Image (tube, rainbow, N blue to C red; front, top):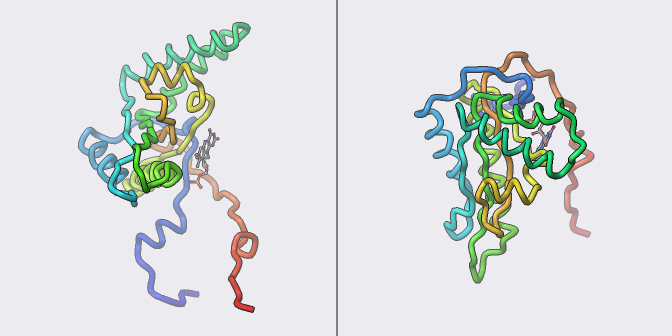
Length: 195
Ligand SMILES: Cc1cc2nc3c(=O)[nH]c(=O)nc-3n(C[C@H](O)[C@H](O)[C@H](O)COP(=O)(O)O)c2cc1C
């Protein structure tokens, strides 16, 4: 029963779902659409206007090239890695036509804690995800081991203070996602009552 007027955006936010990267195929967004996505990703609450994030786009051959780097690092980390595992690393970014790395890039500031800057980077990831989904694309926010490996950070030219907030995979769904269980409101909600 509808109890109040809702908007299309409201309905979208209530039902949006991520699609697993392995269930993505082409096409991905065009260059114009990518620019739009980044513009939306950067339109997040950002205490002090520090822009404590940046974006790295991986598409076409760049996904293959970086995959070779992931496989090399995986081999250094785990010399017993099988050929199958190395192939998986090589193909990691080829699961989707487009991967956008969101880098949390905190700035020195006397008043604005780094924690808030990381939160803003998380918001940028979510904006990117919902923007892509609202354009009809399949999208998923993943980190996986590559977000936490120091050699990968160096391969991606991250500075010492920077961290990967997420890799947002974007493409076309080859399979519609099923609904995912969500928490019951009473498990995550309390009302602060005055005594
Ligand atoms: C910071 C962050 C990192 C994540 N990393 C992974 C990951 O490495 N592997 C994975 O299977 N899901 C990961 N997820 C979960 C998926 O992105 C997502 O929660 C799941 O697909 C359901 O998304 P939906 O609620 O948008 O449908 C991560 C989520 C967040 C917020």
